[in-house]
Length: 77
Image (cartoon, rainbow, N blue to C red):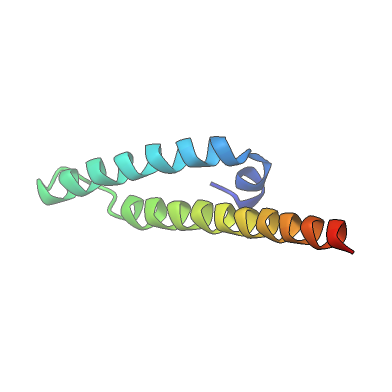
């Protein structure tokens, strides 16, 4: 999955997609252990996609937290 595709998703969509990808990763690991997985690079790609999505989600949450903090400080002044 490309970075621009991830950034276009909403936070709720990201959370759902992360859960789906983690389930997919578990399935890939089982297939790999049972010697049924032909393309083992799918494991690395799935892990990287999950990491990208989690990174974007964390950045968004931090940005929202900073925005809320700025709004509170502006209201006090």
